[in-house]
Image (tube, rainbow, N blue to C red; front, side, top):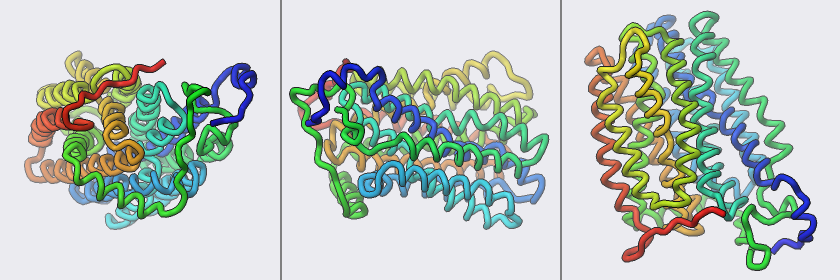
Length: 431
């Protein structure tokens, strides 16, 4: 329990936890800059080098796989080396990959810059950073915080698209890549200055903690890789883990894998300018903030499983209708799709993270890292599959319909994620 005087805690206007959230939001935003960039760069690269969509999609798939595989180990490395070091290294890798990609002359080099460097860098933070901060720095409002930080990660990859697409179309794709590198580098000083591992490092209790009863959790030191693997071994024996992993794999497939990578090329196939299509994805990012924060608020109050069922069903209906909505110009039906898909983009994250914490307790963050690995494996498979569909059929229709079917599967499996047999998950209402 903190020895910070009660008077000092009361006179502090803004709890340090909120400054940590703000900087983490910016870090996730900066790292996510290149998450959506391939969608704006595929056509320029295709036109300059003649590389096929499936070849370039393979580089994106490697990125997505590494993004997911690194996540559970990142959670353990944050315990071992601290938030600041992990975040600084991650942002540096993203900047190096984005800047280095301007020198590519062969498609295999995309595997190094887009795949290995950027995939490893973004995976070193990803949503695990959000879950770690919510767990360590907050006792109440954890769902809300997960919503805010998730919005930072998802919004960064979408809002960077319009300037990246405009630069790629009017100036050059290399300049667009350099812009993303600068954004990632700019956040590093803030992360080093503000981020701390635990509230006790700032001399305070976690936000919402009761001074009379709060007991600081045990800190883990060393054995980062072993704890990550032990968490996986424990989780795979639980039916709830597989339910969450399958559903979250569909989440990744239908967001980062399908829409995030292939929406712009698909819209371009229908005659829509790349910059316009990128602007639509940016609007998705704006509504994503509203939807994800609202989802965090709802997660603090309602059964997360029921929320997931609703989210996946809405997403499936949207994807089923998308082939009829794409056109050379923006019309009201497309605007409606953008709004609905934006509200639902990563609204699944707060309830999924909450279920991991409720079911797996002190292993919750690392297990969430493995569930997030499934998310990225789904995204990688969908990114590659959609590229192949485009090369074989000359259009993306079957890819969109396949995503819709997967959403129905995700809705059905989400309800199986139960904390323990015979007990209903009752969310903790935020103070």
